[in-house]
Length: 539
Image (tube, rainbow, N blue to C red; front, side, top):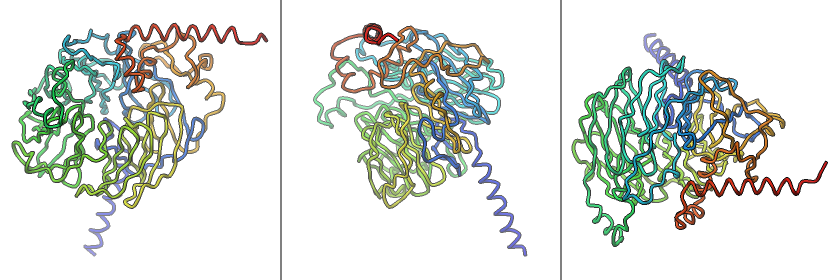
């Protein structure tokens, strides 16, 4: 009887654990575990602009931060280079109504290194780091523009820090993370590289550590057959964009913080360095590390696109002793992987090549092609993986170890750069213009679809103002020339133009500035409007 009772207690505890896991809040970049996994959610498999769309809400200005969710609230950040302001927006999960649209900061003029002649803020958004949320607070980071803590209930600012400044030619991407006491975030610029822990309640510095990696850049270039650094990007190998992860190994916590040319583990209580692996040429790191199967999985980028699996039980420099396996074959430089048991799934940012590896050995089990460009990281739930591309396609595949098994390919009128979020049975997708809530059994009408605006600089609202897309604003649809220049978000239009590699290269080679390109777009839009009016029959 005792054994039966113990088994019964075990299964009851297991069921409770699963139930709690299934309803965890998606509180940070890549979800409650920081790994893109959400347990047992009944998400829709097939959807379009009408089918299984609970609501779709316009998000003003520009931002690539991923949605975070607490109970029935979704929070994202947004910014405008034209208006010189940075905002945080709260959307009701049930209705799609905007509850708060709060200006957090007026922009500070970016610090620019005159020697870095290829300064490229247009390759990023003003609001790329993902917020982190808990029961009482929302923590938002805009990199060197500032970090702030807001009261989640009222939207009022609790504290702010605007003294943490670095030069990031492509702006900041590292998202903050929190534990019960501190907020942690990396600052990896071309001029300075440091990691900082702030007191959650006050914003004061608990510890700060310099994390500059001293490597021989010229030797690294020579080893790759590059004769010399052409210049124009001094200290480019120092920058990074990765979000840290806190893990526990043998009862002790570690903060795994990828940087430029090194993966570093810190004691999260003191900032003491525990171990590091050095990978010269591997900078621009964007993917968030994952801890699974007793290993830390992390990508590098820059000159080296390496996926490494590292044992986190060493001390000092463990580059030659604790890397269990590594691969450079078809590895992404932007989206993070998903690990399900002993299977590792990843997708390349260009071409959409999906690979499944044995997570313990690194051996490839299969490879297939979804197509498209993938900057968003995939998410997993209930045996299925969701991949969203910049071309607006959301592919659903089985988490199979045998072969690529595509369940569905869904097309939305969107460009996806932010990673998805999951809440119970809803998939939350942030495009470059809108926020989608996808759930089974819902349908948008043709009238609602016709009212969508692409893109629109919705008038900013104060806190607690409710704004919804208005049918009267439905004057543009995706793929058509932009009309109504007075309402166009020219920052977003410029970024969309520069997302095309061929066009970006032509603009760079011409030496044209962002302001000149926007002025050209405005004139082109005005000319298109005139042409349309002249060619429209009288009714």
